[in-house]
Image (cartoon, rainbow, N blue to C red; front, side):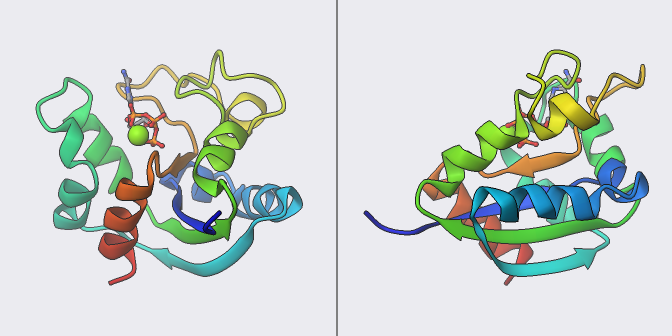
Amino acid sequence: MAIERSLILIKPDGVKRQLTGQVISRIEAKGYVIAELKQVSATRELLEAHYEEHVGKPFYEPLVEFMLSGPLVAIVAEGHNVITGFRSLAGTTDPTTAAPGTIRGDLGRDWGLKVQQNLVHGSDSVESSRREIGIWFS
Ligand code: RTP
Ligand code: MG
């Protein structure tokens, strides 16, 4: 079975709350390899490419604004089944109900804002990981 790569983002809420180290520790503790890592300030163009599947949804504009609100950390993690494995580690999208033990479940909550601030992003398929790694690490 081929080694996968996943594009992981520590979103601006995670960086602001100084949770970068904890998120990286969880990725490493699970056994995945950090192949690339950088702190970046996203541009609108970059986010429009990254979130093209969500254009037109009610949370799209607040999501882009949120992702522009501060620096984020972009990571490429490697390992067998890392795409599914990291999404399992991250927990479900809504941090209020994400399972304890997951990144979103342990460290996230509802802040009463327009968009779910849920600390991390992880690619959801081999195809999207290729596309997203090309966007963030071209
Ligand atoms: P991600 O793409 O960030 O890994 O998260 P995901 O697959 O679990 O969620 P997705 O449906 O792809 O949505 C992308 C991001 O948009 C924000 N969102 N807010 N109703 C809302 O307030 C809402 N729905 C989605 C979240 O930040 C979500 O991670
Ligand atoms: Mg998604």
